[in-house]
Length: 299
Length: 335
Picture 1: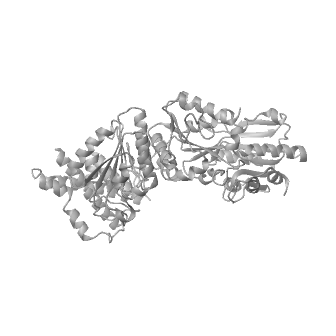
Picture 2 (picture 1 turned 135 degrees about the horizontal axis):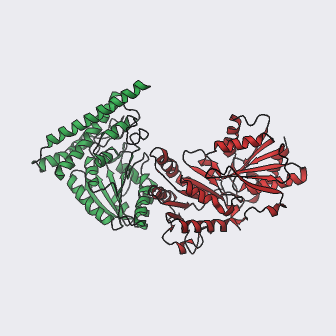
Picture 3 (picture 1 turned 90 degrees about the vertical axis):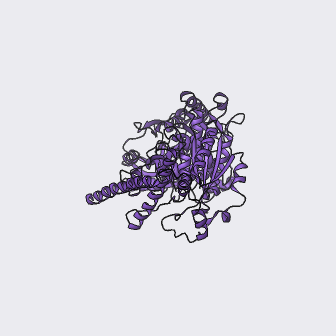
């Protein structure tokens, strides 16, 4: 499979899995809550193309299904985790927001993983492993005190870390420009951090930019990438998105990263990729459903 | 040897023995060597592993969680234990969760100079550990003058859990327990030694084994007060007390509760002494455990702790809130 097909596959896997998860909630099979990643897929796919999880470290957020899928390409451990099954990636203890797999670790507290990621990167620097940490965070986290502390600490200790800000414009329902003054770029640069800005329309650009930032991080330097994006699903499962205008949705639909690949690189058979992905998700869900009903029968 | 020096020597030895140990904290490097000089000289010998931090408590405590996840063994100094409230999220919502939700090792120790009697005022005198009792996967361990060579610090690192390590500031200026100071009338024994942490038992030399007036249970900096009061009531009232001091103060282990149960078979009275606020305090949990286990039938139970007020700076204010000798004495023999 060529690179572009691979990136398309990852994005489609994330979008369809998230869609199916929403359906499973509606059906009443899943408990708790979920935070979907529909619309933001190009960030996980592009950024994480550059990561070797055996060596490098990735920290996520409460909205990390996409990161997990981009790293594993396997929807089954995620879906069964959401069902609370022992076959889940964290034995069903974690649920949607608490995922841990090899060197990937998330948590449910906004921004809380960023100082931890700095410490992990510090450890790798100390043992001269040449590994780096990638720390995802959202625009809401940019107003958390310890995120600001983490940015400062990453520069003070010159650790190999790339912060990736997934700015979808809203902290839950509160628009970023209503909760912040100044700009994120000014804020980040004031710590002496290198700052790069992209939007989520072009997955190749995200992947290539990340590749050069990661190379720079390996020289024990902190970097910051902001990707402006748009969430086409609710913040969480019960969110009807009343605060997002249809015009806003329409303008972001023009920037859909999968449409962009299909238009720009028409030589690939995208429908074949979609079929394979849909089958994989269906199989994963059926397998998990069976386990779930067997478990219920045992009770 | 003063406890400040004991701790300094222990940290030196640990850094020398284990290259995965590193120290983090505010002003801990030379020439300052820490607000209480506990890390004096260490950064000169181990410059890469004694790390001065900005005043970003939740940031560098979070960093230490990350370091521990990557196999290092960070020991963090929070300059005054009171500042631990700033770090609560990283401890409770992160370090604690990673242990049993993810099954990860988080071998980190947070050193906390705590306690009053020094006139530092309301935000620099608290026994803040009180807020962190009974949190899953967070061990709370207290240093006392009974611990020779601050061995409990080494044990905390060995156990490998996220650990809050309580150092009473006033103990820094005290010597380790010496029997001769008490006319060799108290015998110190280590009991429950089969686990990582032990418990200390201080009894009077001629103690009759089938009767005891008072069993005092306490930890940390209160040991000196317990000794003083026990000596005084023994001389003046001929009341015999035995003092029990666990190293691990939270969680309360079943074997510790059972040990107290065995002592309460002969003791007439139980006094639980702690410096922190008594309301919903350490003693509340301990007494409820003992009661549920049926160990308190027919016993007089007293608690001596801080009253639920903030600790004013002046001596009179401190004495009106913190445990005093006279309050402890009264608890030992007044009904």
